[in-house]
Length: 376
Image (cartoon, rainbow, N blue to C red; front, top):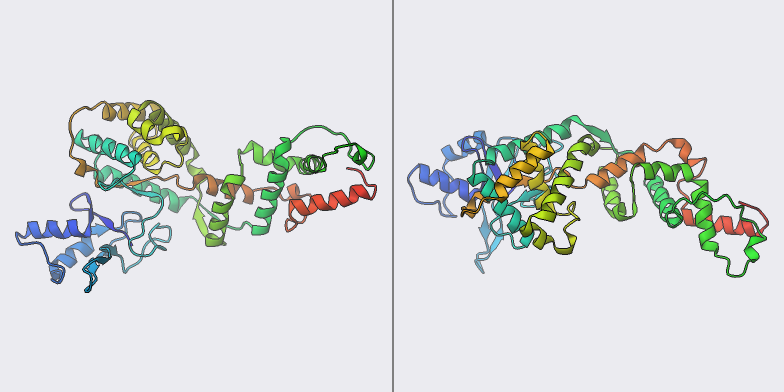
C-alpha cells in the first residue's frame, strides 16, 4: 500500500497528511485531529480523484497513522488503500502497507545519503525552472506501466537448469574458453605437478563450448546475479512477468547519461566516490536520468542538454519542490534479462546432458574416467 498517491485534480503527489491539510485549507477549517473522523464528502472526492502512483487504480481510501496509547510513539504510518485492487503488474500489489517498491524512488527531504541529496537538488532545480513537474513525472510512470502490460513473458525456467548453467559457466570461466585441442589422457596424468582442476575446467569448457559462446555473445555473466535470479524464479514461477529486454535501447541510453553525470557533475561524483562509474546500483541517479531521457523522447543529446540547463542553475530553490515519487524503470534489468536469455537456450546446447547434474559432479566423473584409461 503506497505512502503517497497522485491527486489528478491537483496534479500533485501527496501523502495522507498533506492531502488532509489541503482539504482543511480549502474548507477554511483547522487541521483534523487524529481522533476526528474524515468528513464523508472528503472521502468521496478522494475516492474519485486519487490514484495509485504505480498502476493508476482509483478508489483510494485513507488509512491514518496511529500511535501507542502507552508511549505515544507512532506504531503505524498513514497510507493509501485501494480496496478495488491494483493491476496485476502493479509494484504495490504484493507489498505490505507502507513498504515501497524497489523501483520507485522518493526524492525525500529526509534523504540522508549524499547521492540522494544531490539528485534531489537537481529535481528541485528542474521543477523551479519549469523543466520538470509532478504531472510529467507521473506521465513517465504511466509510460512504464503501459510498457509492462504490453511486453510480457512467462517464467518457465527449471531451477535445475539454472543451477547447472551457473555451475558450468563458473567452472569453465577461468579458462576463458581456451581453443586448445590437446587430448588429456592417463599418460599425461603422470606429469609432475599436473593441475587436474585446470584440466577439468578446460574439458568442461570444451564439452560445452557452444553453450558458453551463447552466453558470452549475450554478455550474460551469471555469478553476480545468482541470488537475485533465484528469488525471481521462486516468486514468479509459471507467472507472466514484464519483459525488460523490450527497453534495452532506453536502458543503454540511461546508463550512458548516468555515467556522464557521475563523471562530470561534481556533487554526484563526490557522493559516489570510487564507485562513480557503477551507476546501475544508484537508484536515485538512474531514476533522474531516465526521467530526463523520457522527457527528451529518449534522445541522448537532448537529455544531456536538459541536464546542463538544470545543473548550471546557481540560484536558490525551495527544497520542498522535490517531494515527488521518481521511478527507476530498470531495477533488476540485468537479472530479468539474464533469466529470459536462459529460457531461450536452444535445447541442443545441453547435448543430452542431465541439467540436474552439477558441473562439479561431471568433473568428478571425468577424473574417474581418466584414471581408468579413457581420454578426453
